[in-house]
Structures are given as C-alpha cells and as structure tokens.
Image (cartoon, rainbow, N blue to C red; front, side, top):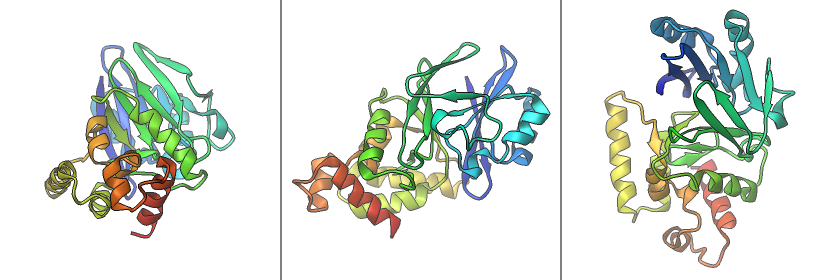
Length: 253
C-alpha cells in the first residue's frame, strides 16, 4: 500500500492510495482536481474510487469533475448522502468496504459534522480521519456536542497504537503551541513539538502521525488523563466535560 500525500487548497490534505499491482487508485477527499490530476499522471494510473469523510466543500468540491473524467465510484457517509456530490455508495457504522485486496472498516465519528466517517484499513493499520482527528488536534464542533465528539475520538483511540493517521488539514504547528498551553509539563509533548517545528522548517509533511504519539501528546485524546485534569483544575469533571473545556480554549487560542 502506497499513500501519496497531496497538499491542496490553503491547508488541506488529500491522499492517493496506490495499488500498482492491481492498477488502481483511490483518492481521499480530493477537493481540488487540478492539484490531484498531476499526481495521477505521474503515477500513470487512473482513479477508481473517491472516499469522502464528510460533506464540506473543501473535501468534496472535486467529486463531480473527477467522476466525469475517470468514471470513478464515490463513497461517503450515509447520514450526509444528500450533501455529497455524486455519491454512489453510502456508508454506515461497521460497514466493511472491499477495495480490491484492501478491507476497509467504517466508523461513524460525528462531532465536526453530524455524519462524519473515517476509513480504517485494518490489515495495513492505516486510518484516514478527515476532520475528526488532526496532529495534536481535533475538528471544531460544528454539528455536535463535546460528549458526541469525545465518543468519536475514543473510537480512534481504541485502534492499535501503531496505526498511522492521515488527517484532513495541516494545523500541526498551531496545535502544538496550543497543546503546550494545556500540558506544558508533558515531556513527550515538548519533544513532539520540537519534531513538528523541525519538519515544518524543512518543508516536510507532519503526516502521517501515529496513534501512539497522539495518545501521548494530543490533549483532545487525553481528557481523561489526571495530569490534564489537574492542570485545568477539573479533577472531578467527566472526560467529556474536560474535553469540552479544552475545545473551548482552542477555539479562542
């Protein structure tokens, strides 16, 4: 499995999942065809599938153009099927998608949007999280409560720790700065922040991250950790309440 990282628009990531042996390619949230197609041409491969995580236009704007050009099939969340341009297959919680030799499990992760889904390649231990989970961050709660989003994040946190995470945006520097404001006494976070700054200074990608790193450093996955609860003076609060406070602080950071 080869994943090509494609920065698009101002701060989005799209991804090409290349299977040269079977001569096919799938694209995750390819909102900008003019930035996607040169990579397809370089790989000398066509586009067979589009995997949408949610309906926002910075993830779906390329659907109809790419579908017309490549006759590809479009997958997306069932709960947002009326908002996904050109959708062919609507996916629900625990659906299993077969893409040639790949088995992909679907998780519904509402919070950023009401129907958001993620794509978990179980054998390869790779997950495409869209705008649910970022490097050291998570998506804004446009269509969900802290309780809903916390439950969604727990689904990701329960995956194997070696899982590689490919997210929908490049917010890593600002997320690291914010995370340090919440948990500056986390030595692993301090080291991770330095790693991210080095990657950015080298014009390198900060994705993929690993679930293990996010569990150690991402405050949005650590709302039930005593150190963060103590730092926020919320020792007796529920994890969802702590998460909500962290999200509130990030929104005005």
